[in-house]
Length: 195
Ligand code: GLN
Image (cartoon, rainbow, N blue to C red; front, side):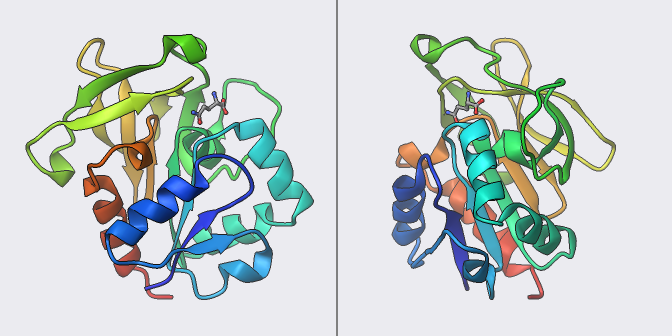
């Protein structure tokens, strides 16, 4: 199976290592031609405005959007990646893929110093809660009817993990913890793609 990590800015290496732990050699995606043959793409955390502008500069925005919408590629956005997959970020003017029927609030928990960890129950990956790390994290404000909530923050019930068909989005950073269940879940989605 061919799975890539968008490698313009952010937590690229950590996602590549996580996939390596699952026996997969991930493709590092920097140019449109790197998308060929991919059944799945991870859009990492980092800074969504920067990643979005670089996607425009490197002519990646449209090819990624098209491949996802054509059902040729599953996608998973973590933190900034979740923002980039979304249709709406509350009026911010920034380049977005706009493929998920979601409205996202950026920096919903404050700045870098307000980073925290929480145990998030995600039934789709098992009964044990997931150790979720939130760093200048976004939160899901509203979702369309075709989006499923996978996980909420126990303290306030805010939505932090969602899925829409072959698209997965998490507010937090699964790549920086040892637990690989979300990466495994994503690979299951990728394996369903008929590339
Ligand atoms: N706050 C960042 C943004 O808006 C996301 C932070 C992250 O990816 N850890 O893009």
